[in-house]
Length: 67
Image (cartoon, rainbow, N blue to C red; front, side, top):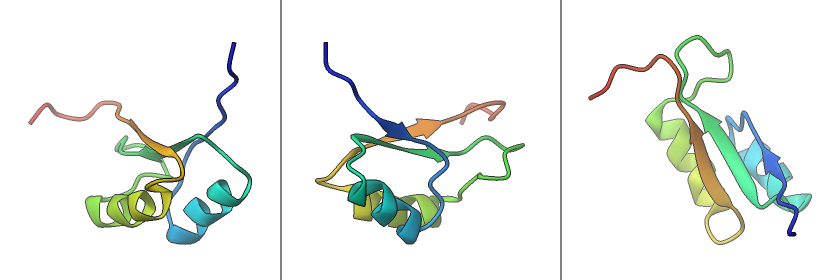
């Protein structure tokens, strides 16, 4: 069994760099409206750009309208 490490609530490029530096395999961004860690698409793209090639990006969605 392989252990994967996921770091959730990434909001900034610095958050993503720190996650990469400690070797996470999954980086989570939150789109849940009620969360204080919620990101917009611009912020999510910046995090994704840092994680790209280093870790998979995971999105958390809760109570979001289906569009």
